[in-house]
Image (cartoon, rainbow, N blue to C red; front, side, top):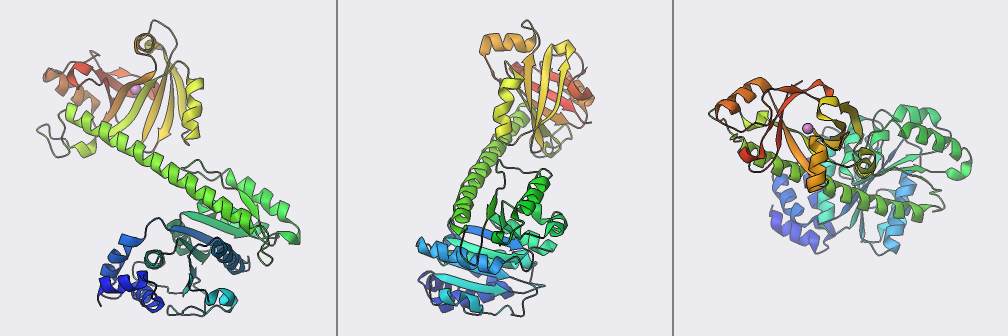
Length: 418
Ligand code: CO
C-alpha cells in the first residue's frame, strides 16, 4: 500500500479510496499507522460533533437532519455511526442505513457504520482514526453517533469537539442512570420528541443534574428542544453547536497560554534556584519542584475575583493572615493556584507594593519537598533571603521568601509540602 497515493486519491474525491482507507484504519492492519499519519497532515479544523443517548431517543433521525441542514449550508459532511449492538459489521458501506437514502446519493455526505468491539487500542482509538481519515477527505464536519451507555461510548464522546446528549420525555430514571458518565461530557442537551409532552420535566431533571458537573471551561450546557422527525429545532441546535465549538476553542486556547506562562515562569524560577530539569549537585531534580501559586497584589479581592471566575476558576480558600496584614484568596488553576492578596492595612508589605507599583504580579511560589533543607541550603550558598526563618502562612503552610536580587528580579516564595 502506498499511503501517500491513497491519501492523494481520497483528497481528490475518490470515494473508493476513502472507503478503503477507512477500512484499513478501522482494522488496524499493517501500514495503517503510516496511512493515518499521512491523513493527519490534512485534517485541518474539521469539527467533530458527538451525538449520544439511549436507544430509542431518535439519535439516528436527528443525525440525518443535522447532516441535511449542513448540506443546505453547503458543508461537506461525514457521519460515523458507532453502535456496538448494530447487526452491521465493520465493513458496512455507504447506503447501509436505509434512512440515509436521500443523502446516500449525495457524494458530499460520507456515511460509515462501525460496530467493531475489540478493535486495536479500543473502540475510541478506532473511531478517532476513522474520523481523521474522513476529515482528511475534506469534510468540514464529522458527526459521530453513539449509544451512550458504556465506558467505551464515553471515550468516543470525548473525541468530539462538541458532544450532544439526546434525551426524550418520560425518561427521568434514565437521566439518573446516565449521570455517571455521559452527563459530564455533554455540551448540549437535546430534548427530542419534545412535542410528546413532558419536555419540561426532562429539562428540569437536566438542570438539577447540571449543578453536579464540574467543567473546565466557561460553557454552560444549554437545553435545546427538537422534533427530529419534522426537523423542528434543528437550525437552533446547529447554531448552538457552532457557538459551543467557538467557546470551547477559545477556552482551550486560554488554558494553553496559561499553561505556557506557568511553564515559562517555572523554567525561569528553576534556573534562578540553580535547579535544572536534570539532577543537580544538590541531589534534587526539577521534576520534584512544582509551581505552587502565583501571588497577585490587588486593591480588593471582591473586585478582582469576578474576572478569574469568568475563566472558570473558583475560590478554594480565603483567610486573613494577621502577621502579614493581608487577606488571601486562593483560586484553583490546574495543578497550581492563583493567590489574590489584598492588604488589610496601607502600611503593610502588600499595601506598600500597591502604593509604589500598583496592582500586579507580586511573587511566584515554588513548592519543594523539604522547605527547611532548602532554606538551609540557600542560606549556606549566600542567597539573599527576605525572611530569617521559615514562617507559617495561609492554610498553615510553611514558607519563606527569596529576595529578587538573587532570583533574576522575581520575588520568590518557597513553600513546603503538606
Ligand atoms: Co504566596
